[in-house]
Amino acid sequence: MSTSVQAFRTTVWNHYRRHGRHTLPWRTTTNPYRILVSEVMLQQTQVERVIPYYKTFLRAFPTVQTLAQAPLSRVLTLWQGLGYNRRAKMLHEAAKQVVAQYGGRMPHDAEALETLRGVGPYTARAVCICTQH
Image 1 (cartoon, rainbow, N blue to C red):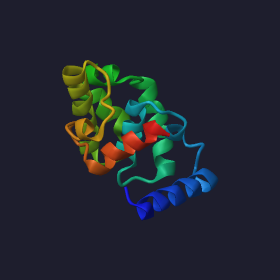
Image 2 (image 1 turned 90 degrees about the horizontal axis):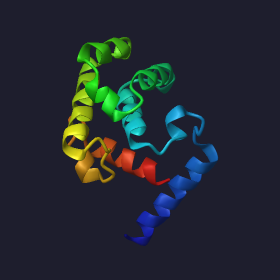
Image 3 (image 1 turned 120 degrees about the vertical axis):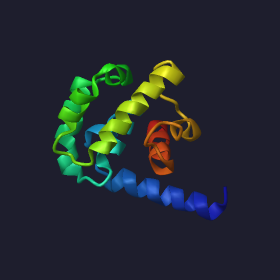
């Protein structure tokens, strides 16, 4: 890694440590499933709108296994009001993949995360970075 890239990373992390919104519920966990849920919910949706949905969703589906086993209709009901229901459907499918392909354990590397339905490069790396700090 070049010196300039490392310097940039250091600058960004220092700014986050000083000014980041550390009290957001997904910032207080290193659980990759919970971070994935937040990342999917935050796509094209304002942070303040996501917070109550995130909390309700995780009360209903506290683990990737409970989400995978849930009927899609229940998932969509809890998602109602966030918009872009396709995200909920893909998150549900991703949970099923985690159970079937990874024994119910969320992958920790970006390449494996990108194999999950609806998870692209940004989301995969966001999950990885968040679980490392």
